[in-house]
Length: 398
Ligand SMILES: [Mn+2]
Image (cartoon, rainbow, N blue to C red; front, top):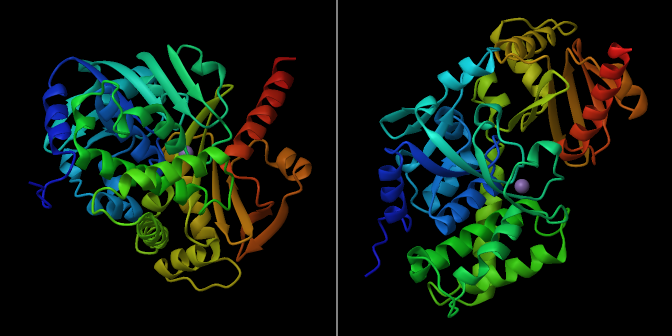
C-alpha cells in the first residue's frame, strides 16, 4: 500500500543516516550553488550508486532558497533527512578550513576531519577546496572540464546538454525502465522510479526554460522518456504529466524571485560560487534582486534618502561580504528579461574586462555597475576572467 505521507526516499534516507556514522563514506554532491539541477542530479546518482547524498551548502542558506523548499515539500523530503556541508567563512589556511568544516544531518554534526570520503561530483567538476584531498571516483557534468578534474577515475561529460539531469537520466536510464537487466533494490520499486523520473524532468524544463534556451536533442529525448515513466504512477496521460511538470517549474521560478525579505548575506549566498585561480580567490553570485531596488532598500535601512549618494550603502555591504568571505574580489550578476547587469567589487581585471568585452558603465545613486551582453552568463564569463587573470599573473612574473 502506498502511504502518501512518507517520502518515497524514506528507506534511502534511513540507510544514509547509518552510513554517516562510519568513518569511510562515499558521498555524491552537486555544485555549491545547489540549484534544482544539482540537487536532483546528486539525489538520483546517490540512489543509483547506493551512497550518501550531500547538499553542498549550509542548511541556513538552503532554507532561504524558496524554490528548493518548494521542491522538497512537493516530494515530502524533510530537511532533517539531508546532509549539509557547512564550511567556515573567512580567509583561513586550507588546513584550518578543513578542520572547521562540518557535515550536518538533522541534530547530528560530524567533523569532516574525522571522515575519509570518496566523492562523486555532479553538475560541477572541481571539488570544493575542503574536499579536494579526497579520492574522486566519478564526475558527471555538462560544463567544460579543467585540469583539476584529471584525477577522477570515471568522467561522463557532455557540454551540449542544457541540464545535468539529462546526462543523469541517460546514465541511470536502464534502472528507471522496467528492463530485465539487474538493478539495485531502490529501482525495483515503481514508486521510486516514477517519482525520480518526475524529479529528473523538472530541472530539464527549469534550466532550458522549456527548451527555449541552451539545449540539445538529448534534453528533449530524455524528457520525453522521463515523462513516460512518471506518467505510470497515477496512470495519467503524458500530456497531463507534462502540464503538471511545467506548472511545478513555473511555481519554483516565481518562488525563487521572492528574496526582498532576506538579508544581504543570504541574497548573495543563494547562488554563489567560489573560484580559485592563479592564487586569486573570487566569488561569483547570481542574484534575483534588481540592483536599483536593492540600493533603495539599503539606503532606507540607514534612513538615508540622499538621491545622489544612497548607493554607497550597498557598495559597503558588498565590500563587507567580500572581506568576511576571504575573497580577493566579488562579482554580482543580475539578469532581467533581455538585460544583464554586473557589479564588480575590487576586481583587478575590471578595466581589461570593460574594454575587451564592451561593458557599458552605469551608475545608480553613486553605485557603479555595468550593463553587459546577455550571453555573458557565469558559465561564459568565468573562463574569460580566468584567461585575463593568467595574463596579469604572467606580467607579474616578468
Ligand atoms: Mn547544471
